[in-house]
Structure formats: structure tokens, C-alpha cells
Length: 263
Image (tube, rainbow, N blue to C red; front, side):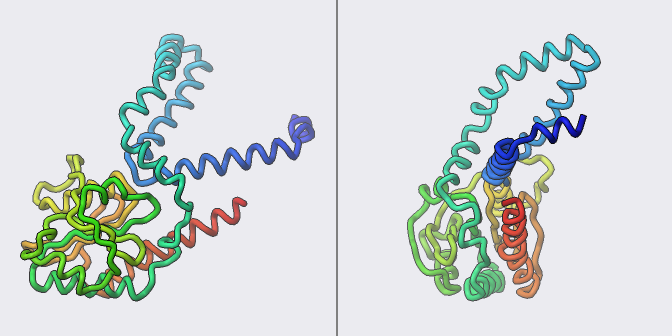
């Protein structure tokens, strides 16, 4: 049987499989970090369930799953239109943009200096670091700046006397592109109610978009790192430096190596 199968396999078939594999990988990369990504994995359970129902001749379950599949695409478009719109916006971006090839050491050091300087004076701050996905939707509602990222500029923005201190700063590569941006608050019931608005906004954004957020607590003067909907306190510059290096250098390198092997 296997001889017949592989004997009939053409080069065109192999190319077809490889192209389809890369398309699936690219689609998953586009929706990574969004709610649609989590739901996509959940929907995959329906495929073996449908096959099993047909195999065991469970007619009622097969009928329900068959009717459900007819409206599945429409339901996904309606429920996740924002996520789909953001994912489509990424199509024009490189799969591995320059930001993910390793943040410049100077940029990381400027960020570290800024957040711990703000923490020392208990000045609240919310700094978003764009990754693979575009954050243009959030940039549009903020104040455009387009300034080189420096510790001094970040500290000036978040001073209470600044008219744009109340909101998030969005960083793209080595530039501050906007300030005073409003982020979506998390709706996850498992998030501690003790967390303030800044922390809930940081979690909410990283639930929906592939980004990293640095939060400085105004009440406690602590620095937190938020990624993938998870938050953790970073007590010192050394730990924050290691965390940023892992996120922006190690992980993208692993993805590029995988992509090259797949090619």
C-alpha cells in the first residue's frame, strides 16, 4: 500500500504540500497573540470529533456538526472581525521584521534607564513595544510623536505635568511613534482585581496583539513586564535586560531557523 502511495507521489504533490504547510504556518503567525489564535486551536478539536462521529455512525452528532460547519466561517468573521482586520494588516509587513532581529542594545538600555528612573519617583508609565503585528489602530487614537527613543524623552512624557502622560507610549523599533494612546482593558476574569488600570490595559493589549508592555506602578513604584497576557514583576535592570533579550533576540532567531529549515 505504501509503495503504491509513494510511487504515485509526484514532485508537484510534494511542492503542493510544502506550500500549504507554509501558508498554514504564516496564517498562524499572523493571528498569533490574538483571541482568534486561541479559538483556532479550540476549533481543531471539532475535526477529529466530526470524523469520529461519522466512523461510529453517531448520526445526531454528525448532523449537528455538519450544520454547525456551514455557519462556522460566518460566525468567525462576525465574532473576530477586529482580530481578522489586525491580522490582515500584518500581511504587508515582513514575517520577521527588523525589530525582531534583535533590539539594539542602546534602545534596551534607554528603556531600562527610563522605567527604573520613573519607578524611583513612583511615576506611573505604560510603554508598549511593537513586535510582529502592527499597532496602527492604537497609534491612530494617540498623539503622533515620531521621536528617537531616549530615556529623557520617555521620562518627560510621563511627568504628571505633561498633557500626554495619561495613556500609553507606543515604540516601533527605535522610535517613539505615539503617546497618550488608549489600550483595551482585559476582560479575563482570572486577572487579579487588585491590579490597576495600567496593568489591566497592558494585559488586555497583549491578549489581543503580539506586543510587549512595560508598566511602572504609580502606587508601588514597581516595574512589570507583560507579554502574552501574562504579567510579572522585574525587580532590577539585570532581570529586565535578560527578559527583553530573550523576547526580542532569542525567540525570533528560533523562528527564523525553523523557517529556514522548512524552506
